[in-house]
Length: 93
Image 1 (tube, helix red, strand yellow):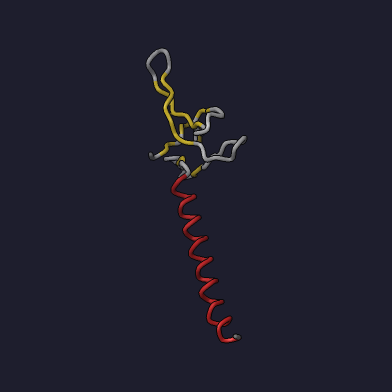
Image 2 (cartoon, helix red, strand yellow):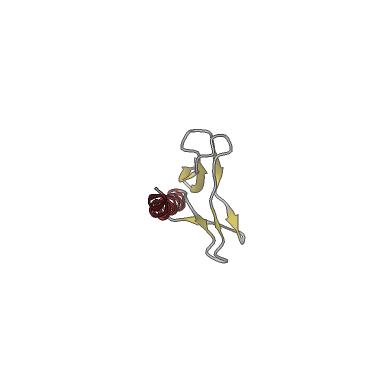
């Protein structure tokens, strides 16, 4: 019995490490990341109502211009995408 516990403990620990690593990988790659081209700062944003990561989108204005925005995929609203160093931060889709 003791031998079995000793053998299973490292396997369980490894399993939890693999699951945590995979979860962090998914979290990093699912969330839209905005990056400043000047200083390299990055930003991830979530909805304050449902804690869901905001997604990148474009809002078309009446005069034909397009504005980069971040919006909640559950319809809770949208915001102007973040600024840094006086410029819009870019989001790679």
